Image (cartoon, rainbow over all chains, first blue to last red; front, side, top):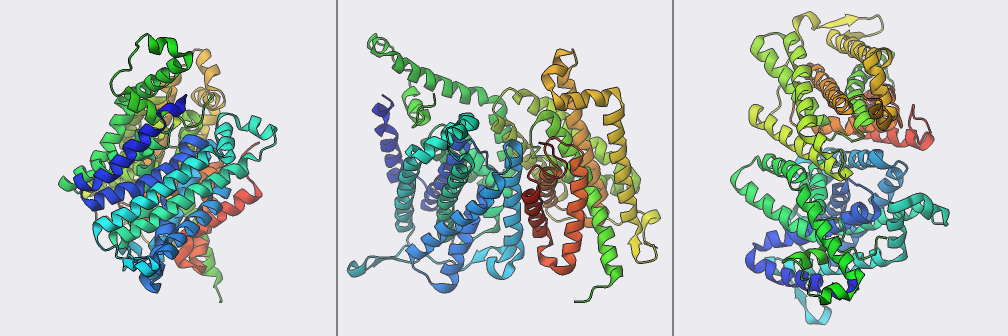
Length: 346
Length: 289
């Protein structure tokens, strides 16, 4: 039954992607899509696997620096650059994930954060490669090679936006598949009761590390795109605050679906844009917003989830009520679509 | 490469001094973690606030000692407020909300520091009484580092006595063990939590004050220290608040000695050490399982 609304969020997202560059500056629209990949990938861990990662910026940066280095110094092709982001993000996430997964709960969070800082130190002090505090400059956008049809330059903002949109959609569809895959089912089940999953014969830790790696793959490719977007990979990209921002994007969007973090990312980037235009110390305002949302609007967030789940429950009860003309409150349909877990949670 | 014994010894002592600061900082984090069961993401920012408060008070009053007293008091109060106004309301909600709240608080504190003191770091020399170095035979040891080592050890011992030997400490230990039971016995757990957060914050503030004459006060120090404190607590071990002390020393020594061989990567060596320890003892140094 949950399938019935299945196409609505897709349609909304598609419309959003088409309309975004017409109402927003193209760079901002592009950044939203890039970070949306990151946030959705983070939600694979936070929402689905129940692994509260606070170090996603590490994989973002490793992907961005690796691809950026090849783009700046070795004129590699676009597919090669994206592949580098994928491999770098995946490998770093596999290694770090395998270590962090040895501890659970709070310790897991602290470890992901600590490794984020370790990558930061490396990026900061390895000046000859990463550019240290100044960032890695000289990153180029290689053209899209179409063989006999010629090539498309990505130097125009809209052309680059189109590329990012395609990558985003491919990544998003792939992540939907991951959630629906046996691996997705295992980590979701392990979130609810890892002992029971282990007792029926699954290797929970291995599945979780694999999920961590997959998350790193998408985060890494997003990092590669980010470097190309601004022609530079700034050190801020690997700062722990960036990891915090990513968690915030996931949370305000809602963790129970893959669509939620996309909305959360758009809200965050818009907020950042508004704040940063009138004050250099915008993180202060942002901190206030974070605290306010968590303290005072949390009831709203929970209420949203509750209303959505009540709506779902009502549907499950059968058609009688629906036929009796119980109309959903305005907006609730979209919320339900946004919050409906792709996989049943019972 | 030949390394003189004197230099090695000097770095070792240096490591012990830095390690005691880490221990002090992580001990506070460990107490908060033990009782409230949250990773205090604002701990590094509280450390930085402690550093800047001690700097400002010492500058204004001309007395290093006044700054040293003001830092833990002010930061402890900030901690009480954070718990009372913020964390308190979230005990019933999802884990990630508490985490995000503390992240927001850390952002606010960090930006407030920049607004008040500017983005450029500040430095301060140790007081005249602690300037210079003492000759301990094999090498010279800066007086100020000797002071922070002993003072940190003293403070840690006092808090240890408080927790192990007093009735109040018994309540804290019981709270770490089983909150529900403590609450059922008629003890006000809420007040206990507030006090624990305040105490943990005060320790962070004091560590910050100690650090100023060594590394100065910089806006980045909060994030740096937060990462190290997290590593120390993870290394210290599951369910052990004292493991942080041992792990703090270990991390300080590793970092100092690594600076002799690979100066650029001495901070990264902390993580290498952490991975090695977790490999051999997954539960951490003093962890029980």
